[in-house]
Image 1 (cartoon, helix red, strand yellow):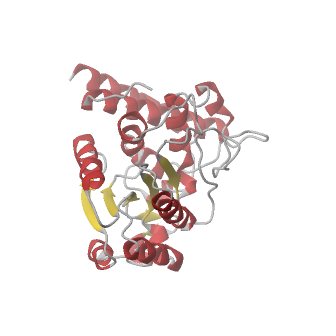
Image 2 (cartoon, rainbow, N blue to C red):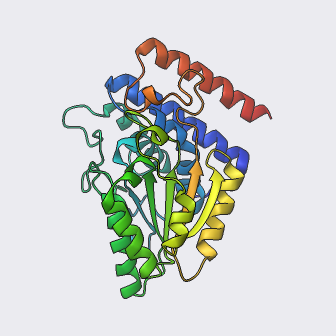
Length: 282
């Protein structure tokens, strides 16, 4: 698959992904909105610049592996996979429909490119740690990537996985935390603060990088630094704007787990299309 190297072109791709997410949620009348929009820039970078993968050979033995721990943001994963060529983009509109391969949480074995089933939070990071250990044992050069939420860092299993990864010095593991500060019931700081998160990760022998997760240059630089890090895993703490790109959704936790109404979806698409034109002509 041809990689996209230009910052402007990657922003255009993340805009297209956001638009498809809105269309999917509008069609399904169900699903999570804020997280997928906030993580669009990360997924554009991963699938069109960072990952070593081949959509024509989804099970290629030398591919990097990407796992999604916060499975509820799967609309953006599905959109990225479709744009990369794993399956037709037209199938995105079957999201959450009966018998669709694109359910509200990913299901391994149903869709090319989906490496893990999602649902219970914290399992993705645990699976990724196991995969990183296995790659070390098999002397494979692949990198293991995992996307996760800040809310799931309120759960014990997450910290067991962090401890194992640091203890095993898994420098082939790169985690990206969607630090958008929201969860379904409100703001993480009000429900159960995870701070000081960066210092906690460092005490678990993780390399940490804090970035603006919606700044493509910072995103690419962080992945490059993480790949060069030896002797410990890397946690990229990506500060993202939930609902990014849609003015009436941004930073509003109420959009964590609800879809837009049809008129709201139309308004969102108009805003995103205007932003796409701004990017194109800038």
